Length: 207
Ligand SMILES: C[S@@+](CC[C@H](N)C(=O)[O-])C[C@H]1O[C@@H](n2cnc3c(N)ncnc32)[C@H](O)[C@@H]1O
Image 1 (tube, protein in one colour):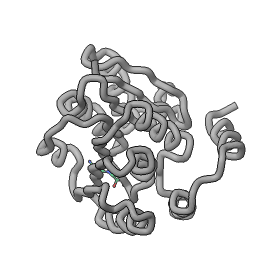
Image 2: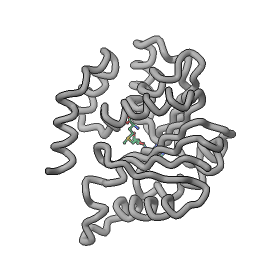
Image 3: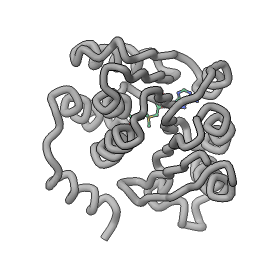
Image 4: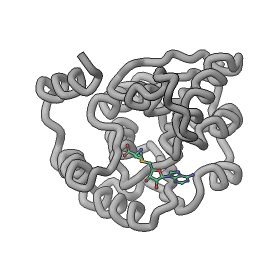
């Protein structure tokens, strides 16, 4: 059994999504746009509620699917800083947030996520990392600087469709994910658990 089979099964049994996230999933499917999907989305929602998160930063927001789960969890007092280098993603994201009446909770900053983060001040309660995989190792310092103690640094695609454990695969994206995983596990500023949810997530708590 492969993780895609597990994901397909869980999608069949999980409750349906509300109108806006359902429309986002449809757009992602039709346009082959990589989003975290509802399994990881539900986890982010649960984590944000459990930790009473208010201030959230995303590195690589796409058109807003992951941020939408956060925005549903954080309530009126939440604030989500989104980043993406693609203007079309920003416009599409803001359209969905307007539809849901949630745009006041969002600050979408266009440009390179690592450069933007260098100019931000923390502390954040949660940081989600979903940028290009070869850049993953550079995000560890960002999270270490910007997270509050006890805050969570979540990174998607840690299993990378199984490429990480196939020794024959040596491309730069796979190497980026492998290096990131090894460094994050070893970093004493975090306590890290890798969870095989969908394509794998790293859940690192800043100690
Ligand atoms: C996998 S998608 C993000 C999906 C989003 N987290 C979700 O689940 O809805 C990755 C996004 O990161 C953006 N991206 C990749 N590297 C980036 C970087 N260095 N700076 C800003 N955006 C970046 C891409 O444009 C793309 O939209």
